[in-house]
Image: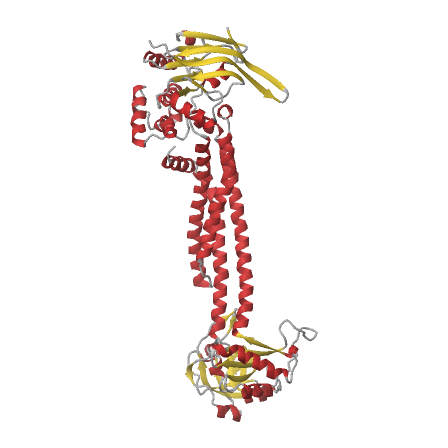
Length: 224
Length: 397
């Protein structure tokens, strides 16, 4: 397997300031993720794993330290440039699915391609193919409230795959699902990883974490 | 992001919340409707008045007692100092440029058999009156001759209201009516004129000057009507008339009024009225705009998570800004278009009953203003939405 470095965190810290009180959430994280990795980040709530995920996903910027994504130092890039990288290279899967309630499955999946400026016919075909491959061929024109939790999360995964990102970031992807649906979602992620996609998940469930190739524990803002 | 996608997204958001979108648009609809309606009515009023005034003849010049805007006797009564001799002087002086007629007018009741017609204006004037006042063409019969005028014959030309009230469509010519204690033979019927400013222009009887003078026992006259031979002569006639009258009278005793000067007074009044009406309507449009801003702000707050998600998926700040701005503009433009339709429909309906003229500038102004309102009031919420940080927005409950 290709062991090329995809991203590198170098001594990343993150402080939150609220009034005069500074909370140090991340206290120097150094981590290298290679292409094809499947990493589970675990830790208690408040350990900083979500903050770390936000920084990895370019939704947040570190207070200090270097973040190199795909060979590019990204921690001081402009907002639009970050949006562009998120759109093209990062697929997000959230605990609460975050689907647009008024849009159908198909429209939800198409959204990232819309922001990428891809033509409507091309993106529709692609979205349909992803939905079909995830067993949602009969759910394409339904709105999220007509879908089960498992189905909604599969729509979200299809959406994350839409622009062929280099990495899938899943924040507690099974957190709102029953065991059976959770397993289906994990199987999909494992399958994607097998095909070469880099996957990072955050979870506090041991069974879920064990399914990843590598487990990283975070406690009180540092890796242990 | 492609423009067509942007438009699609904005429309989806608007259609996705029909009631709210409708209520937002309503403010704009009412505002635009009001601007078009009120300006149309104002303009319609103006053209109605100028039409009415020009129907008397644009060469027309009046001399009326007292000074408009000048000194009046206590109680607001104008002391009338105009005499028949003034009229005669003017006729002599202006022989080559105008025709002149003295006018006595009194309001009284007239009778035919057992029927009475009230509040009839009796005009006592000379035989050249129809040459001066353009809308006094006859439907039937003839006007009195200079001979009848000089001899003080008791003959009368009646207006349409007098005719319908007293004669029930039977031929009035040759019949005799009673004005006070005197009997007058009807020799003519004036064509229907309609009403001006709500005053019935057909409730009148025109009689020879001498007969009226004797009838009402008065020495002063109520007005002198003049008609210049050509419109270009109107200023000259006005100046000459003033000069001639000032030899005997003072400036406070009379006013020489041309159709044009009456028109300019009326026009300036109706202009102010139109602007005032338009201003009131503009305020309602402004309120509509604040409504748009309010709804857009609510919409931004309500869709915070959605904005966060869109940003996480790769929406740039400008994509969010454009989407929300476009939503506001679509709402305003749609409201503006509907308002124009209603405004045009309303103006046309009013035009059938009263007076109303749709002016293209009011339509343009209303539409432009509604778009402006959309942009201006859509801007703040759109900027707010675009500045949201994706993680904070995603965390928003």
